[in-house]
Length: 327
Ligand SMILES: [Mg+2]
Image (cartoon, rainbow, N blue to C red; front, side):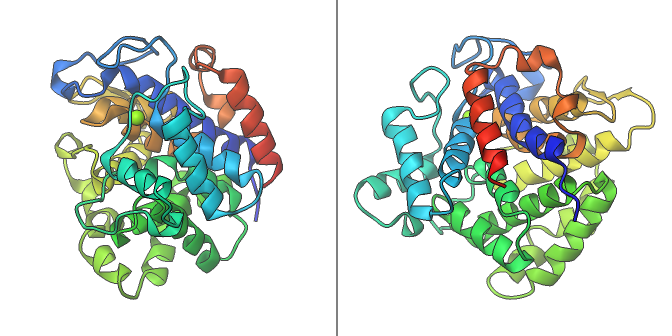
């Protein structure tokens, strides 16, 4: 197994870049906004240039906790510190929090054990655990598939415990794991599909694989017109869009412009911008797709002009470097 440090580092920073690029577009309808091509400030949250949101905050909290070893209780408490005391925020306050995450953190605050605090309801399948899961894919990358996925599931379930959210995080983390093991994008995806089909062959996961994730895993999703693909805050839409964009951009033999005016090229920047500009939840689809693009192309492919404007860049860099030392 070959571990590519630059790609692991890229996975982390890709999340922050996608989140930062998407923050100014949040809540704006994709057809009523100009595609973003460079970082900007403003938008509905009226945040300064380079501001990142809950997606990066909770990713950083997870990494921060894992630096001291794996302890789900500590992870839950780090998340609570973010909500209550603005731990790992851009500007010392929280301006963006999902409903399911809020409910779980309120339970943790009330004294529930963190592993029992996430909702397992079917209508609690937003993208709130997927958007922050990438440090777990990096930290546990050398473990057996069974141990790897059980830990991913536990960390998702701190806030999102329905089998659909667990499987979405599992598929995503397996793909990230393949990419940081230096597989090319097509091989990484086909290996991921094979592992997913063989591991998730039992209840309660098989039902999700056969129904909800079948279009993605069978490849049928990729025969659709991509403009019809939704990119909402539903975890399945977010995962579908991020994987679709990674594969579609990597296959662009020559640059072309899609229906949304997004230039489709086989590189990191184009892939992340494709995710951000695609649809209805730009910062989180950007963060999730950004993690994939970073893991596929590597940190060295992230534009300097993006990195330079990231708020608290030096603080993030220190944490990422310490975290990657622990892997
Ligand atoms: Mg956000």
